[in-house]
Image 1 (tube, rainbow, N blue to C red):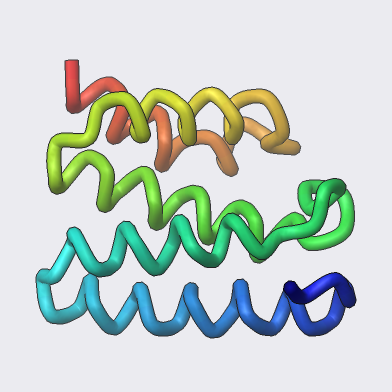
Image 2: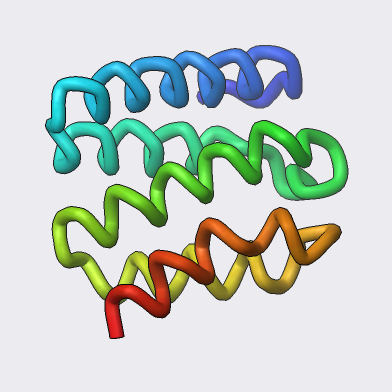
Length: 102
């Protein structure tokens, strides 16, 4: 178990990079798994401590959830970004995929 903030952020960032590579190869199932794994390594106050990393992981997870048809995950991630996003522009990506899934 990784408890240190620096190490958990590093693992989350590595999962983000790997997920983006999987997305680039159109492997959205693997990418979603990697993004979700990255999210699981974020610390409790991640929206305050690692806002940019959190936002990018959640945006990518949302895109992949949309691509694979996981509407429950799509709604869950959208709700969290809508709750913690600082400005409207930060919420646009999740809103786009959420509305597209309707």
